[in-house]
Length: 129
Image (cartoon, rainbow, N blue to C red; front, side):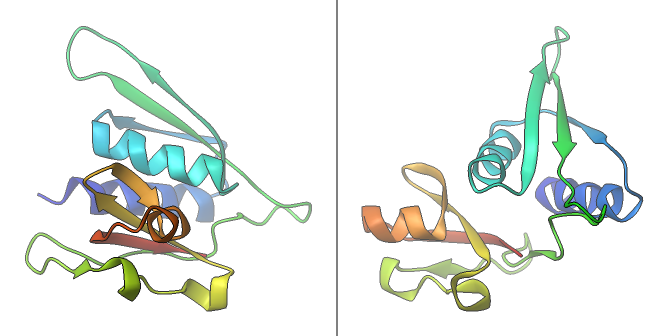
């Protein structure tokens, strides 16, 4: 099962339905992706609640003045059936720099710009704009 794809789909669907928040089972990869989305201004906040098991992560979505979701497009690039790896020099510019690429590197989950600055490549998880 593709847990990252499920995570991205839930965020996409909650944004289209104009929900304030959405809940997920917690994982370190999901926390890393949420941290990157928050630092780049695509979500308001996220919280992790420990419940003695896996934990629950709540993501608070962000909307513009018109009420439209800030995340217009959220797509999975590397899938379990077809992994996509890129070098530091091959990290794509999403929407001519107006979007965001999220990578899983040996230094953790990073945005494309941070990975270029740290000169690390990795698995290209998703693209956001």
